[in-house]
Image (cartoon, rainbow, N blue to C red; front, side):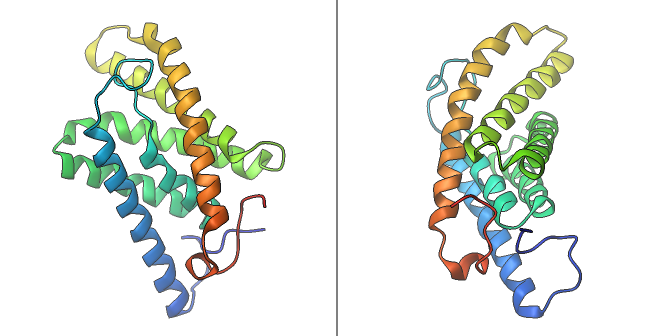
Length: 189
């Protein structure tokens, strides 16, 4: 089954295209609000320094399941860009963009190749670990300090956070009303 909408799809009717844009805007807004709230939480909630739950990553995952890969990349890019502008952390783009895009690319690959054999939670979990690895790699390059010693701690935090966000995304998609996505689901029922 193909996603309901895709940014690579042929021209769509005005109502369908409007619905897609509204869903995209809603997902970006949710990602921004959740990420902003999460940034205000104390930093030591998880096992590693700087680790977060990554709840803002639920929105791109939902976009991947409901809308398709192209739209998931749009949500991720806008979440990174607008999040940096809203929080004033524009320098954080050098960490969030490569980490977010590469993690999503791995999730897309898994989603389209082995989704019938693994769960959304597992896809999210693997994406979270990829995100942490890329972010540590970028931070090591930027600072000139080998930060990969933090990888076991961040990978453990990524396991927990990725599984949690994947489960949330799965249950949100499962409960979405027909009117939101037009009736086509990519998730398993």
